[in-house]
Amino acid sequence: MKDPKVLVVGINPWIDNTGINTLINFFDGWDKDSLAHLYTRSGMPNTKICDRFFRISEPKVLKSILKRGIKTGESVPNSDNAGQSADENKIYKKKRGSFTALCREAVWLLGKWKTKELDSFLTEYDADVLFFPVYSNVYMCRLQNYIAKKTNKPVILYSSDDNYSYKCIAKDPFSLLHRFWLRQQEKKLFKRADKVMVITPKQKEEYDRIFGVDSVVLTKGVDFSNCPFVQRPVADPVRIVYTGKLIIGRWKTLAAIADVLGEINKERCRFALDIYTTDEPTGEQRAALNRNGSQIKGALTLSEVQNVQAQADILVFVESLEKKYKNAARLSFSTKITDYLKSGKCILAIGDKDIAPIDYFVRYDSAVTATSYLEIKEKLKMLADDTSIISEYSQKAYACGKDHHDKAEIDRILRTVIMTVVRKNR
Image (cartoon, rainbow, N blue to C red):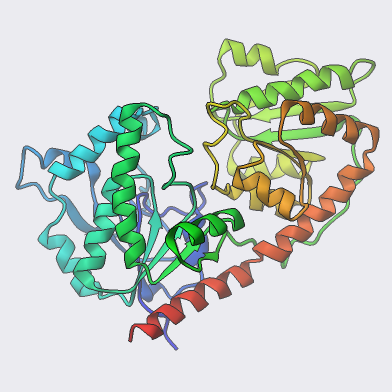
């Protein structure tokens, strides 16, 4: 039987072999003729999973405020010249505050995006079901609500972060105003939803309570069929690897590891921490991280990341323990986690006990966890005193990955949800 026609409405163009690939991972087994993607960046897609795309260009929406005749939406093909322009990359990568976020929402409020081109695409494609990732942007909620109302098709929401509570935002007036506005639009989305999917058990418990739903947990799937667990001897010195950003206080957590290594490596180098990041470290960060067997190594390509992780004994997952940042990833679940689990390496996970990733690792006993600076010291000394624990948690991480993130099971869950929603609305 042919797959139901799904329209996914998101922000970024779909591009294979990038770090932004969760939605591609979800739908890579779907019938290409039954999948379309509508997005709001101005770049071009390049993916094998889909051939039908509609782009509402955000820069053109901005221009339409003054030039009402400008065409903001159009169907676009797959392209070898995928991604954003250099200027657009600079805009999106630049750190933006809450006032800037409100200005962006004003652009979409005043700009022209409800067009005949958009309406024609929606009518022509005639989706069986709408799949809406939930974002922290008011304009995206407004766009999704418009499409749901215009098409009168069943809606599946997928929430992968805390885009509703006030816990993870700054308490300045602009942030509070933006979150208040966002919550109003999200309430409308959740009222329209035929099914809600979330990324972690913790988020399921919270959202089921808030919205009165019975949500389904769905994370990025991993193919374990050609990836057997291999127990490797622990190296001497033990090699700890971090691959990721230094932002939102994460570097201070890594610096705390370096502090402890100063004690562990006092007589000889027993642990070495290699930090690979695309961020350009400040002088303060270099001084805090390049010491006691810890060293910043620079950036890696995706393939290089896999090779480096394969040579590691311990993979580090860190979030900030600072009060200012500790809730930044409160309900998120990094795709890095599933990659770590697949690797069959011991995971050292550090973060506040209330955030979803730490809750997950504790819930499934799949990592050595530390929820305070004191615990970082305790857990690292424990691993130094008994390296067999590293081997034990390598096995636990891999088993957790197979039990909860096997690609075949993730595909089955998604397909079951979509088919059930479509059948109920026929």
